[in-house]
Image (tube, rainbow, N blue to C red):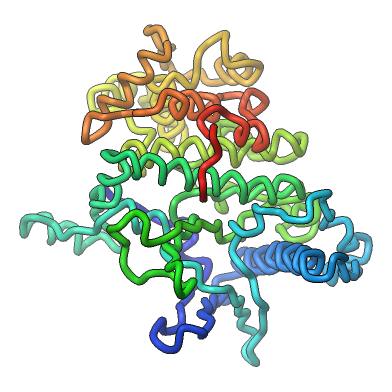
Length: 426
């Protein structure tokens, strides 16, 4: 299987050396490749903007915890005088906001004399993607020669760590813990009306924290009790809120270029101006992505929404003469049907609207999309033929992967889901 990254041209980052005294703080230096054009430049400004929001939020809470009161000064935004910092950050009733511990720690930014933009973040560990997959060489010479002709292609296989997650009680608890932390991070975003818009394993960074030093272990630990798992989300370059839509995107606004196709919900695939809807609806974009991440952890593949060659051939007979973009959408929607996501007459107003518009000869699902059917579909696609071991995990995924964003749970509703009862230890 192959895997790409829509953010590859956006920036480059390098962690400082991890060797040295235990009191060293490790940082990531991320260069925004402004030479690639205004879109990349604006992406860097958005990442800086959101980084400052969460940095200031964390500092405010530290003031409260240390001194019993906040010394935060709400200043006018450097970007636009009509937006004050107070508009961008609300001090919530709780003294402690757990979600801030699950968002990348922005430190500062600076520009070089050649107008390069550099962002500085604390080092947080390795991506969930690197934990889930093992990169292996092609098995035969012909395959190697073919791959050498394709740039930036990797062959990925489920890792030993993924097998541990799938086959042990400790691993299942680890998955529950990671999704819980992901939702806590999104709560801190959504409480500020921020949509991350690029939730995926590459942007979920994991630290297996040594209890003695507090630093991230270099290797994936084998003993369950020898570490605590900390997850943070990174890369807010695709993020949106009211301010960024008006001031930190081009005149056309957010586009599909900032989205990762595999994790994009139906409304954003079909409607280029989906973000002009209500804020509550926009936030549901991230909830769809959480559902895809959960399925990816269950199936051990980033290719969640794929159809087999036979179904594709049948579709191609109806799609002759259509452009590639329409064909890809048709394949995607067929894969949705097979996972009971698009059910005529059930999935709300979006289903009725876009079924009428999608005149490409794709027949609706003829099977009954019951919970049992969905469970068997997932089990059949699982390389280990295990599928879901927790019925509440299955039900949460189905709730997250609703066609109509209004039918998906909010982050608060997801955190209250029975799957998280009792809450993970973290």
